[in-house]
Length: 591
Image (tube, rainbow, N blue to C red; front, side, top):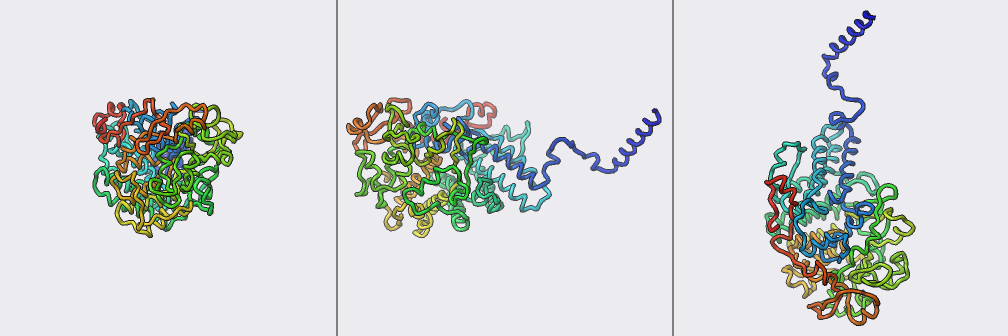
């Protein structure tokens, strides 16, 4: 027995000695788990890792760049559709939407911890930086590695741009940190430095990402065209911010915005969804469950029973309804604003509001005659609109029920929290708006530019073209301090992108916070309305401009008499716990 042990011992020793000359023997890794040293080898490894970034980005509260509807019950507040509640497009009053009401009324206080869609999600940056430190280890061609590097850098640039838009200076980090990394105790990086880094990321992504991942818009991965649209959006935001708030190189950013949008417009495979049906084309693709193959939708979030679901359709009431301000911004069919068009029928009754107006209005706000068409409130047969106090059916705080995204079929026969309405995150129509606005802000917009941008959107709904030789002057906007042309381009953006989450940042980048001081009103509320809507319990006020009486949504509530402090309210406050953890980080001015 002793001889056998001696023999085996000598054999093991020999093996060790022989292998001791081979460094690989000392670098063998566990066979039962993946480690950082064994993982980064193939394209599939890179793809799998980036899949985890998409998974992190699915948490809209932490990473609100691919903002969809959040999930299940939480879709009552976490939907991108409701982000317009922060501004003047919608009138939330439900207790679950208190945050939106606080922000829009100027009654928001410094939070102890990061609030909704706020100063958080930094683990996402860490995950990106870990990937960027390892992608080049893979034994694949550089152009393949660059695809995944570009994907990660698109995420990082987009994430930081969103944070800059809310907070100004940000803690820029481009490497994986440990517990004693100096960045943990550093002040925030200056806005202009951070945004230079953002532009570098977006430029790399828009050059290195593939034109297609061959996923058939299933939806799948962000491609190069998506990167160009994101770049155009980010650069437009930054360029106009610097132009109206102060900053260097505003025109550089506007030029980058125009260039990115134009490349997408000229070379990309996308186009407006258009069948020739001017009365339905605008909202039809916003109200279906499967967007695969739609030529306008560039990136969308799919919800599927048993995988990822929402119940956002049931929460339309929480949005409160569209505002009088929004409804009055739709042009008449002669291309003129209601303030100067002879075609405007007034708002004596709600049906008049829709007469001779841009068809997008009736595809955004519910016309009383369309309740059956849309099977509104599961086709309950009630007369709409219905306002606060009326029994049964859906209720609107303003009387202007929102119909743009409504899909009764996503509720009929489905259990609670199992609905599947998708979220359109990036669409081609935005590129047209970004291009026109950037060129107008640069002062280089031509009629040819309008014809390949704004006027294509108008063609879809049969509206007259915007002509440089005859831009209407809306007296309601002469105090905005911009040209009538820019007023009309901003109007087009508000109308086309309603309930797509961009109005709040638009008002802030344009330095138009004063618009949030306008009382939030709904439809006309006179004796005829009181007789037509029995049981209604609403507050009303006289509009100081027209002298007529309208529903006053927030009268008598904590959100009446909104305030907007020009010195502080364009940026959000840094949470108290962040300031306590790192004294080098200073609070934003005025908070």
